[in-house]
Length: 295
Image (cartoon, rainbow, N blue to C red; front, side, top):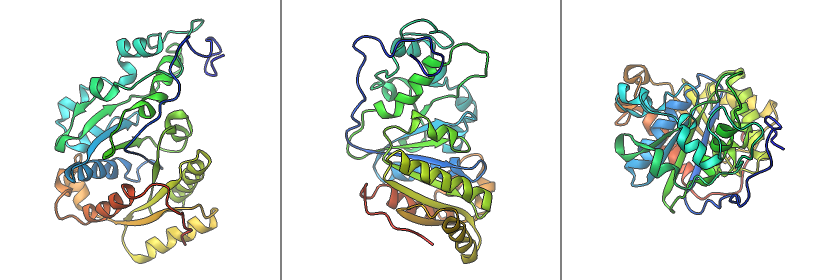
């Protein structure tokens, strides 16, 4: 029975198994609200694209800000139809339209191999953007078709060796804790030098370890001094000392406010771009390296 509503069988006959994700790297960016996840996601995506990699940026935040942050035209960005609201595609892949499905047989592991080719839009530097969309409000009907589609989408993308998926998520750990994290190779945990941000970040890192994601990077955003980084590492140690593959200090940069909402003004010569370039080297490095404790 479906865990969401109890109204479906496990899957339709002949539904595809979990998709082996082949080549490429999938990285999910997580953290507390307001710590700069979208900015770092956009900078990562565009820097990697400029280095010659084929990049798919996935906006899994209900706020849907990633298009504008990547530098797309604002009117174009708000006109993008999210995957979860593309009724025809949802029905084709899951057997039910958004808001439907109770009592029927639903494909809970849909084949989304063609998602990027069919539903992505082009962003600057050749980045392909997929806007997933959020789960609608309570009372809007059965949410199972959208949930099944979103949870399979990234894991089902066909990637080549030099491809990279960068997924921006909404605040907290709930989104990350769902099946959405299935198929990811690495996590970038974004924090700022506050206890609350680090607490959410440590919880995210622990959850990544539980989900079997072996590479977890810590990005300490908006650092103003070495003491900011030291304070964060002290919090990390006292909150359980999870294993991180790397720690990158990302300095506070006034240029972020001047460039907002896009990262266009940050790509050349900014201190934040330099820090994200170091982070991108960690992200696209060997996956599955030996983890080390920090702090």
